[in-house]
Image (cartoon, rainbow, N blue to C red; front, top):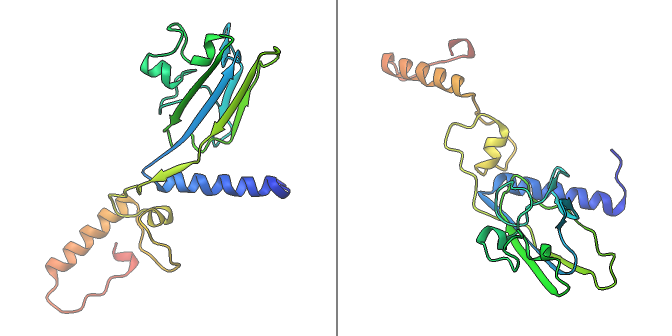
Length: 195
């Protein structure tokens, strides 16, 4: 794949954000949309969505679920139109807004916002995408089984590190225990064929 200029920089920033999410315990990103007769969903047709890190369309505007089309007011039950799941879906010719925080790190970062149906003279929409933020560290509560596991627990230096699959780690522990219990000398030699 060939990238040029800003496209390459944007791809590098997206990749860095994906790695940050992978290493972090939790991540979030906020979205706000101020609308004037500019619905997300009208008569079963979606006019707004966002793209996740894999460029898949997502229609939820708050929370961590993969629920189709919902905003924070729909989750909390306080939308201006009780039958709507977002304030902007009220299709009222007045200024409204929807805002929420997407918290499912497996979809983040948001790579694109897509809005439509602003063809009426009074229609308008202004979006604000908040920063992608992560915190905490993913816990690896087992023997590292890959270089990625070492990276997750904080190893950043190049070198020779021990990693093992779970079954291999169990064999090594069993072999070490047997040698330790049966050894009467101060020095024990183990080679790969002993494991």
